Length: 222
Image (tube, rainbow, N blue to C red; front, side, top):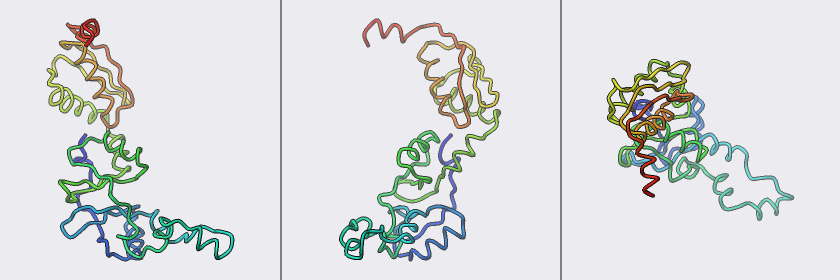
């Protein structure tokens, strides 16, 4: 599943000069956890989140005495606490994703960088946003939707296999693949791609193949 099928297109954003107080109001009003910060041409400069507002609310870390608080505060902490605008508080550069990327790629980025949202950019311009909640909704899809994506996107348009040669059954997110393909590498690729489809819990395969090209490559030392 592509990001442009999951993302929200009507995206609320702020400018670097938006007061942090206004950012907090928008987050509370819209019940969202972060906002893209965009330049005059719509380019994504960074992201400002609830965590950035919490830094402001927390203030400097407690130290022993006033002098200790003044001397021990790091430059980064001081900048976060003193931020007045979205541009001063934002995390930059923003971790972004393209509309044609997959849900699996978005999930990897969110987990790797421990973030809850990804601005979606075309070139440098903001065209949407995808969140963890969007990925969770994709995972909750019906068996019929999962099966349709496996046949139309994976079997037909990604691997160029004949849909008549492979049978896909999905129950409770568990995928069963049966049928025959030309070579073993096609069977292995189909299983790998199937595991990345949102909503798939597990994949089992009873596929057969005419040529074991993987074994042949191993014997050849390729």
